[in-house]
Length: 273
Length: 264
Image 1 (cartoon, chains in turn brown, red):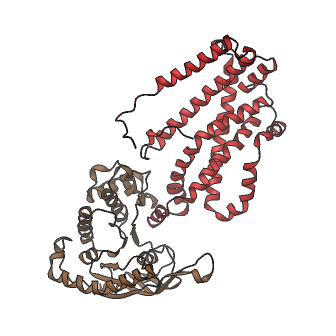
Image 2 (image 1 turned 180 degrees about the vertical axis):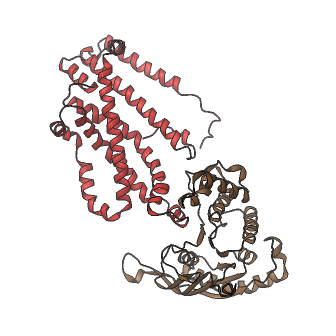
Image 3 (image 1 turned 90 degrees about the horizontal axis):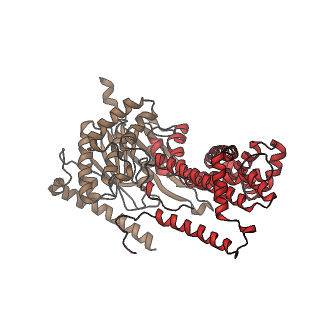
């Protein structure tokens, strides 16, 4: 198929600026992102790293269509984005499971919303719960699950819809280190099964390098934008723990940290000032 | 803070004992006429009157009417409050338009409206139901209205990213969230529905427990007045119990739904 060679990038942010209007005067307006350009290929795993308050989540919300850019355009698989990004699944930083639904019904909700019959939706949801290791916890409500279990359920809730693009906003930041590494490996396994494109936001550089094909460093906010990019040419499949021992990992970490450190310092000075 | 005991001892024996002590004190004080029985009644007579009501079945038509009015006021008031709360909570423009009217209606002493309702709807049950509705409506309305604005934005965004349309958001996010706030207000609403029914009867009716109480007051029969009050209280307690049971069934997704103690 010749058309296959000209697949447009999965996601293109072209010179986007995002300003939040303040209630009072225009002087208090906050520009989270200014003139940011970013492109993610299909099947590519890209991480965004940057100091706190640098507009990482804003970029993700722009890609999801939850936030409209003040200027610039967002293009998804070649088509300009209007409204919500229907191709994308979004994994939130905070708990986003519906507390009144069991694990099973939480995973099934996306299918139900699309008009799939209840029993068919539940059958597929049960299958997905098994895939994320929650097969025997289908009847639990979110408050009965641990943080790691909730993340797994949230992952299944998103992946059951088979989105072509996955947007993840520091999804594992609230987990303890062991659970976190487990989840990262699990994510890599799931992702390897049918590589979609992933845009992964994190403030943890190790996590970013261990998971990604490419790491993008953002400048300190406000008005932040990508300032550097590093290709992570480490072999796959990876184990997030073992890969940190790889000599090339250490080199990459040092190089990216040099760029990131300056921005982190700037962010601190801005807070202290 | 002291450590919580492993298992709480049941409280009901003490509660029954307290009740018996109160009745005992009432009995003794009126017997030795520290409290004049003419004004304070006699508990034995009061209980005898209640027994008589239930044994002969005389109370049932009256209690039935009062309960019917209460349940209708409760159901209609809650549905309207829920609907309006969702509507105004979801459309800020309408909320801003209606805000002064809502405040005005809520601060109006609505019991004063009872005679007007009686003129509009006659002395049957509907004038009482309407009075109850005006009382119940605002309790439910305000808790839903404030609740809608506090629905977690993350849940809303998640539902939208999972493909929910506006109506689906209402059904799958706003309504389930709202049931929590509705139940929080229902315990107060049940009491208010009763107040509406009884006050309505008291101000003009041919039936109902409020009517019985009014008749008894007309002939200074204090014992019957107290008997009526006790029957009403027991009925209100049973309704509140029903609300608690429904709450446990519907809110089983909430942590510690069964362990809530005294509510406001």
